Image: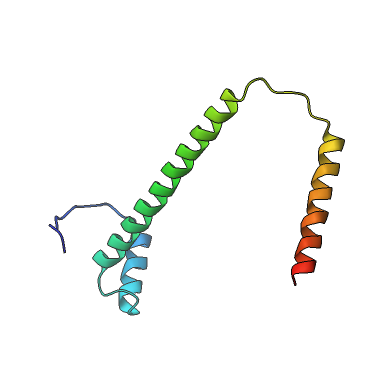
Amino acid sequence: MPDVQKLSIALTAEQIASLKAAVETGEYATTSEIIREAIRDWQFKRELRQEDLRRLRQLWDQGKASGASAPVDLDQARQEARQRLANTAGEQARAS
């Protein structure tokens, strides 16, 4: 294990009880193990959010670079979407 350092945190009585219950039932060996897993989960979710933000910024920039918007005929757009959906369904039926 890498260099381990201690950190003091404040938890509610309910949170502490949940941690202790998980240890008592054998789900985890120690409360520290639970906290480390929670931090790994947080780090993973944080990275996913950062990737999502990078992607949104990229899409925003692409949208701005694509030029001015044009009016859209919603009825025509729905008809085209339904046609694409029907074509996809037909292709899947032929493939199976």
